[in-house]
Image (cartoon, rainbow, N blue to C red):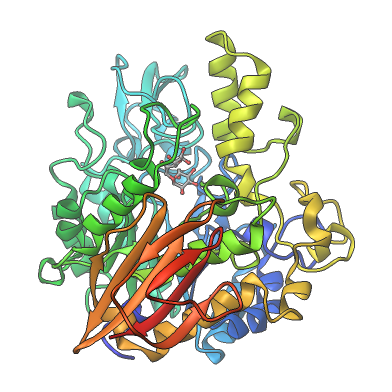
Length: 531
Ligand code: TEU
């Protein structure tokens, strides 16, 4: 395997609960994934990031792990996992596992022991204090929960069923590294590291992200586990700036391959406000943020619009009614021609949309449910809250994958754990595969372009001047130039260039764009080699 294979590949994220159900219990599973590997091979991806499949009480759908070396019954067995690794490998696809080591489940044996008495030998695996400080949970309320039996508070940055591990304790490091090596020995392709920027926290100073010991720990982890294995490692790092991203991903520092940073998701609104508040998206800010990140020199970034925590891009910033196909393709073209490793979230390649949730009964997500209770107590109305959930709630991304026009979109013959989007008759994989103009084939073509062209992987990025809602850039590589133009708007726009087109590489409308003076149709996007 080439040393930098992870710079050249495209990764597909699977949220196992919602991908494919093989035993009709309403929940997706490992055999379901195996049955769809040929579909993924057809798309052309080189790796799968598998959201957690470990044993878990599923308070946060598997991000609360009770045994890192066992598979949750609903997903299958360790044999199924080994079969998935082997079947994926036969198709040239690597499996990147989710590593959730900022916290465990409250049902993990370590925590069960730790909370049994103050002098239990696992007590120091977690974080205990006599008094809570001001730290807040990402899922609303205080980050401290009182434990009756032992009379102290434990820290949980996420739900109270996700107690934080104590990274000040060396023994925790050893346990985690042994567990990582267990998975590496099974032949996995790498790790996606959940909220890894939190492990260096300084609790008493109320510092959570980017704490002082973070990079020391990651260098130690690298040496103790994957350092010499040529794996893909990507850290989920909400607070990363380009400077911080270099600390994680500059190869000389021997930490991670790359980061998931979120500035293109969070710093692209005109107004301040929390996740749940209505804010106006700005294309000029999007251009600014991407230009800054594309200039990253001593490190590597990832590229994504979607994951299991984010609303669907085509609904969030595109137009999922009038221009669903056009806008889904426009976002795909814009992102996949940039520098970095692209990630596709299941269903994104079909242009799957947000869900028209009507009431809280339809919502499973712990983050949304906790937010509702908090906001109700602050005087917000139920309507306002449901509006936020419809706009940005995490269940939008978690509805079952739409495979066909069969009942429940072909995801299950049972009762799906979360409702299937009613638009599955129109939006489904079967239909997409039969239609050469579908969003699916745009993704397939973009993946192929990356595989075949070094300019996509290595070329320099240069933002071009344009109208407000037009995002245009050049990639330059070995004396050649490639122009990417995307109209991020329901309106027509124009774009003026001095370029002469040599070859049109991809376009989401069906005519030859006239390069000298362009009138762009709504959401029009294309790439061509130019002189
Ligand atoms: O997400 C980290 C995280 O901070 C998210 O909860 C995010 O802030 C939120 O969804 C946006 O409002 C990771 C996982 O991706 C997420 O699914 C887990 O719930 C979380 O960690 C805890 O493990």
